[in-house]
Amino acid sequence: MRALARLRIDQLVTRHVGPIDLSIAAAECACIRGASGSGKTLLLRAIADLDPHHGEVYLDQASCSSLHAPVWRRSVALVMAESQWWSERVGDHFAHGVKDDWLEQLALPAAAMTWEVARCSTGERQRLGLLRTLMQAPAVLLLDEPTGNLDQESALRVEALLADYRRQRPAALLWVSHDAGQIERVAQRRYLLDEGRLSEEAPR
Amino acid sequence: MNVVHLSPVDLAIASLLIIALAGLSWRMQIGAERQLLLSALRSTVQLFLIGFVLKVLFDNGHPLWVALLATGMLLVAGREVMVRQKRRLVGWWGFGVGTLSMFLSSFVVTVLALVVVVGNDPWYAPQYAIPLLGMILGNTMNGISLGLDRLTQDALQRRQIIETRLALGDDWQRAIFDSRREAIRVGMIPIINAMSAAGIVSLPGMMTGQILAGTPPVEAVKYQILVMFLIAGGTGFGTLVAVSFAARRLFDERHRLRLERLTVRDD
Image (cartoon, rainbow over all chains, first blue to last red; front, side, top):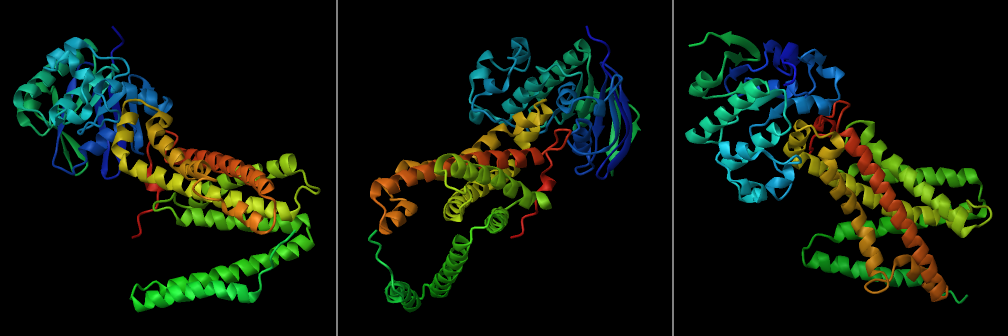
């Protein structure tokens, strides 16, 4: 098992969001909720270093700016709300293949790798998009409504898979969700993002 | 040589076609007559002007004048590439990327052809240098503007895909790979088509001109082949360089897609 992964955000400012300070331990999951336009997605993008920003983010002891950007993004991986596909077949997007038991855990058949992307439902694409990122074994997952297009049963399966991954890797999770019930189930700590300011909420 | 010299009357007779067309356009309310007459007039004036410039230049082939005219042609072509972009790079990049790439490809190819292939003395003799450069520059300009336009449009359209690939840890070269390849292909298609159709569907203009001016057909064909290859080389390398420069400029040193480096659509 690798050394404990940990995400530390120090005075992060991006557009109208911030300054934000936040630390997430390995095997910990922090949830963020907030109204549309409060900057949740912008915050995740800045942590993944996809947008210019001020302040610094650390993975363990290594600062974002000290690492090659693609290396940073493989370790601190953003899963976008809408999954995007560029090749015809699903399998073309999985350079390192896929773990069959993960497919099974998300109720996807092993044949999913041979599917045409165009024929997949939004929900199938969202689950496959998550697996695509998990196959890179990131130490930190930035999840932008990872169950936004899923029914209740699939959402629970995704939650279970992510909980397993979080403990086994062990990974730090920063999870944006609109679903109060889901936050209740998955979060160790809860935050509210309001007009670019992050505040911790007491567990209910 | 049995060149038939054209008299002003000959040209006037040919211009009757334009006038007749304009008249018909006016009668049928097509509304193209003004543009038609104006552009016919423009091309007449522009061509006579460049004819006189070339005449003076040919009589007095000082390298400084050749270089000056070549630079002027390059700058005009660079401006043309810039204004043909729907969304171009902001600042000097919008002009610089196309112009620099044209300079690198067209000038190198032209000089190479003049020194190695034509082998005239002096190598910069304007009778050869200016027409060759003109043809290569004109075609390279088309290729580069098509390629750059395609690249920026594609990057805008596929923004989410490109950023997803970046988020998955691809570097900028991998993330823009498909768009860059398409853009380079699009820039090279016109010259590839021209080479495939040459002699069957179309008789290239340069060759036709030489034959009309009395050159034996096979000699004209040889020159046409030379020019086609030079154009293909200039266009291909120029498009490759321009699209690669521009693709690089769409990302910053942290491999972030920076679409705000493109101008805002002004229509």
